[in-house]
Length: 284
Image (tube, rainbow, N blue to C red; front, side, top):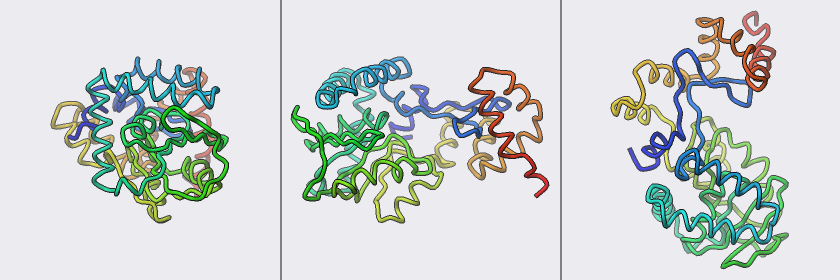
């Protein structure tokens, strides 16, 4: 296991569910694992506090980049695990890109920022803070300004996670393109292997990964006793086909949906969304 993979398990950033209690996702689907890549920032407690810091300060768009860089740099210098993760990612960049070709390091609101700011600092590149409303702030050496248009340039976008690539195509790529900036490369901490990296590659974007959610990752976790054989089998079934996994799981565990509806409001909403979306599918 590389350091990213070790830290995903050590910090609880990657959680595997019980074999009868898969996790509900925001999309109204469910599966056997849940990932919070920002937990690589010292674990759940520190990561949650850091998100609160971001939420409190991000409205000060021109002061925020310098504040966030200082905040992350202090932790980078004091926490060897986070420093190891960041250094590993920086090494990955150097192995795959001529760093001299990079004009900007970009990161999108919010979890990308756990990695993009510190990487920009270490590589001494201008940082592009991209908000969900596509406002972009360019910062370097403590100075910040609103970025409207440029004379061009190339950005390496840092993301915490790639799933289907929706954030790239809905936010980050359009924002950069509007300002005349290309995105020839992206570095993601985790590739969920749900099609996003393939879509980006089809657009000519080189995808560099910290780790890929593949069978090997969970085989190593099983060998290291980080998951059980039943959990491994469940994860592998999901990875072979999420839709089939969900259909078979509900058939074998019909009480799962009933129990989910009886839980908290968020879980109930996701279960109801799943039921509505799958009404009548067995008859088609």
